[in-house]
Amino acid sequence: MEDARILESERYQMEQIRQLESEELQVEEVDEQSSDEDETNSGGASASSEFTYDTSLAALHSYLGDVEDTHNRLAFLDGGAVLTVPLFYLEGVVLFPEATLPLRVIQPNFIASVDRALRQVDAPYTIGVIRVYRDPNNGRIKLATTGTTAEIRQYRHLEDGSVNIVTRGQQRFRLRRRWMDVEESRCGEIQIIKEDLPLKTPREAVGRSTPLSIFRSGVHIQVPPVNRSRDDQYDFGNENDSDAMSEESFESELLPTERRLHQSALVSCDMLDDSTSSDDENIKQQSRIQPARYPLDNFRSSFGTGENKEADGVRLALGKRSMATHNTWKKCSLNQFRQVPRAFWPSWVYQMYDSYSLAQRAAGRWKQIVRAPSMDSYITKPDLLSFHIASKMPVSESTRQELLEIDGISYRLRREIELLESFDCVRCRSCETLIARRSDMLVMSSEGPLGAYVNPHGFVHEIMTLFKANGLAVIGNPVKEYSWFPGYAWSIAECATCETQLGWLFTATKKKLKPRSFWGIRSSQVADDSR
Image 1 (cartoon, one colour):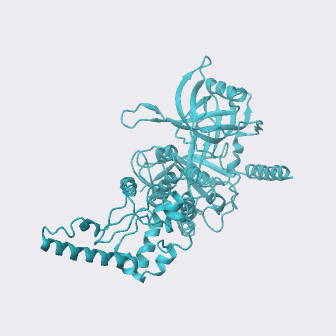
Image 2: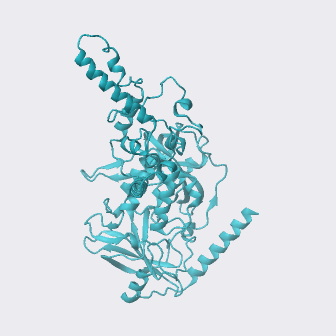
């Protein structure tokens, strides 16, 4: 029944596409006043309350024509697995797991690669996608060493010998070696990257740890012996432990000013700098130190020697003072607690590397900026969320390649949060001309504000869609054929300053279609620095 509903939905969408394509081309100029009104009502990533376009149509890639589904595809491989697959070098494209990549294969050697992927036994319907780029320093062509396997899900052989395929990213890999076979098909030996599991910091690690040795103003606390078990050492599950203080009880005893400072620390997860690793090592080393003697013990060996009575009197006085301090510390007053730092990290430090906490922050920030639908389903899957945001973030391709190469879910999410908070401007890569701002983003596809599309000549472009753009010149008349967005005609858009092709202007062919127009900017032509 579920498959029948899906097929019925696809048939309905294809019927909508046919209706849009049957409309006559009616391009209307958008005056400055209406453009300003739409911008005011844009809300960032949605054009206006009159948005009528069905964003699911663009995700179908119907311009490729009818395609057949593949069957008996390869399941996910274990991390560390080594296999040989056909390689596709794509300029201006960074493929992530779970992202869709359409291809129109025209060159004979790449057609041979597709045919090989369709019939290979070890990795059926699987190819490797690698980003190729030009080194800005010397102009040489270079290949990335980290790529993504792509699963061929749909394909179609055309009469002219070319092949249209729709793939989906599967797993990251490292390229070990590459070569060309007898058919001049590019092949490579790849190793699947073993992804880490989402980290959930246990509450006990934050609120129920026994402090380490702290020397401050003559106050000393003993370190639990190192030969104790981990549970005994940190008193996990001991509800009657009076020495351990939970986060709630700690905050309840703070003054209002102190509580505000503490809560601000919980939010400011970026306060910890690169010294964290060295600090962690210092604490580990400190935890290995055996318990030191109390200050009174330092004088016991000298008491009663009779060699120097005056010195003995001083030592005795100091010893009594140290004992009094120790007895006072046993009471563990709040004032003394404020003066002595807690030996374990506060909760906001653990939250910096809690994958689920980071996923919630990243999803909230993404929804705020992109105006995407609810991301609740992704919050429970931080690994998929990190790939989803990275594949749809409207930044330069080099920045997205950086995200692809990051190992570790928490580190990738932290970098994405940083980019989402700093991303504001879209500039021309060649001349640094300001093209648009973050508030000009527009979601025209159900896959997000950035997606990959292929033109009739086989070139794949990753474009970010914008409601408004500045400093662009439109070249030629609108063309309806082979449009990536059914119901819109496209025209080439160049940078008015350096005349570099930055993308396209898409104009509605139907009067009731909203928005009336929007821009598609190539991520490969966006400057790296987006701040």
